[in-house]
Each structure stands twice: as C-alpha cells, then as structure tokens.
Image (cartoon, rainbow, N blue to C red; front, side):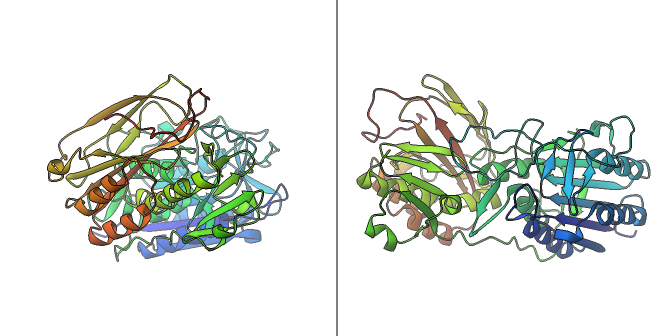
Length: 481
C-alpha cells in the first residue's frame, strides 16, 4: 500500500505599511524546513513580496489538486490579520488579502475528496491578550480592519463540518497574537511550536506521526509556555476520534534555540555592575528587552506578561533577575517537552482574595519536582516535601492544588518537572535556596538537565494585580500544596 503523500505551503510577511513584524518570514522558513525534514513530497515557501494573494492562492489550489484521498496538505501563514469588512482575512504582499472564507472554500472541496488539510494562521484580527499589559509596546500580529477583495460571496463555512480538515488559529475570536522572544529573536509562538511539532515534539505516542489530538495538546501547552499564558491557540474542529495529520521528522531531532542572555532595559541610571553580570545583556531600547526595570518606580515588568514585581530596588533586583534567568532556561524546555498541566481558573490577572485552581496530570515520567518562584525571586520547594519523598513515583496520580491570591503585585511561577530518574541534585539545591533568592538556580537547572535529559516541564504563570498593605519582598509568596 502506497504511503500517503504530504504537501506543504508556508507563507510569511514582515513588511507591512501598518508597521513591520520581526519574525513572520522566519516562521515560514522554519515550517518549510520542518515539512521537508518530515519527508514532504513538495513544499512551497513564499516570503515577503513574493507572498501575494495570487501566488498564495495558486500554490494552495495547485497542492490541493495534486493530493489524493488520504494525502495531507498543510498551509501555514505568519503575518498580520484583519477583522475586515468582508470577514477575517490574512494580509498579504502588495496590499492584497486572503479571506478565511477563501481558505475554507478550497479546503471544503478537498475534504469531499477525502484529502486531509491543515491550515495554521499565526495572526489575529483585532483582539486582546489574556491579561492587560500596561504601557508596554507589544507587537501584535494584527492590523486595523480593512476591506478584503475577491471574497467568495458564499455563506460562511463552519469548520466543525469538516471530516478531515483541521484549522489552527493563533487565538480564539477576541484574542490576540503577539510576537515573542525565543532565543535571541522575535518569532510567532504558534509557528515556532508547530515547526517543533513536525520535528516530533508533539508525537506523544512515538508512532512517527502526529494527529489532531496530539497537536491540540502540544500547541496549547507550548504556546502558553512561550507567551507567559498571554496567548491561547484556537483549534477546530474538536473531534472524538483523532485524524492523522502528518509524519514527523525522519531524524527525530527536535531543534532548540539557544536560550541566550536575559535582555534587560533600565529606565533610569544603569548600575555599572549590571553591564558585566553573567547571563544579563543590558539593552538601551525597552522594545528589545525581555524585562524592563523602572528604577525610580522600583517596578519590574516583563515585556509580554506585564508587571512581575514591585518594590524592586537595586538590592532586590538580583534575586528577581536570577529568577528570570532560570525561567528563560525552563521556558524552552516547557515548550519542547511540556508537562501536562492546566491553569483551570484561567490565564488572567488575579485580584486579592481570588482563588487559583491548577491541575497537574500524570506525566510521561514518574518522578516529580515542584517548586515556586515568588515575584521577588524567592525559591519555595513544594515536592518532594523532604528527602524521603525523592524516590516516590507520581505517575498514576492527579494533583489538584488551590491557593488564594495574595500580594505583592506581580508574577508568581509554579514550576513542575517530571523526570525519568529522581532529580536529587536539583532538589538539594532548591532546599539550600529555600526562603532565599534564586541566585544559582539557572546553573543548577543546567546541571540537572545535563544529568537527566528525559524530562517534561510545566510553568504556571500566576499574575496578581491588586495592591495590599503588606510590604513586598518581606517573605516568600508561595502556593500551599
């Protein structure tokens, strides 16, 4: 029996009159390379001025016409979207646009022939992030509403009616798609994660292919990890029975970007010692930074997450930076090998007195390490509770943990690590840091991951937004197990 064929079209545009993007064309090239590594029969890459409406539609139509029953055609777009007067649309080169209806119409025709289609749209249409980000310049992949020419004029097509089609959108209606810092560049989290999925990161059962169920689980966790919970992909339809989408890379290697230094912008005078601090790159433009420290206001912001700590003077900056250096190392792991976690109560800004509900489902590996990193950079070990629990296997357990949100304002992160063998060295290091700053945590994590590479990582970003009479930085703010 002849193996099913795979065809791919990847389009990406950075240069827009409404303001440029940084990583859309790199996203398209990344996905095209991943499709080729997965053994695609034909891959079309259209970038920049080559990605006109005519060129994209011609390529999409041509690949669909070549596909036979059981074959798969993947079309990815990275760039800006618009709500449009004629419906949601993707903005292409030469001031042209491709309506979602155009894409669905052709996919529906292929669906009737038994051809599997997957469309990935790494753009949004005028929505908002999951949490407000005050006064920071976040580059969103959307533009003001504008007319979309040459629509089909037909009744809207419902994605839920497809038997073999899958549609991956950067966000649900009303949501937004930001460009994010991955390694040393800005990219689209969805496109980056999809390329890794094609390399095998989403192949949970290790059968050499990914289906729509595996892709849904992986993309939700990976994109959440890369965006501090600010972006939630929207994938339809949600079938009971999985549909196979594509083979994964034949070499089985999942490429990981170098995590690089943590880029910090200082509003105010830059302390001389910061310039030479290991793992920190001081940048003059806040738009290029991951963290922004307002020295006069004693406030630390994440470029995408929002306010992460208050009361941050020069002395308190060190543990906060140590925390974020560790998170930078953890985040790529969480995007490549995500632990099965769920912030049940939602990625939102929690007020004083709100409850937070989180779930940790059974992981692929049996040993579990959990710790908190408070807004101030305090380390609080959670599991194992003591050395006697280091060998406990948690694989068959489901954990539900609750906390009442409390000040200070900022971001508390709960870190979950499943490992194939006990991470005793890391647990000892965490115990030494308990109630102290996270200085040395990034190095401890690097050693732990070098000793045990078979891990799954999950990060809960829990942002609080109401002030309190308690002074920040006086004691750890932790979740009770």
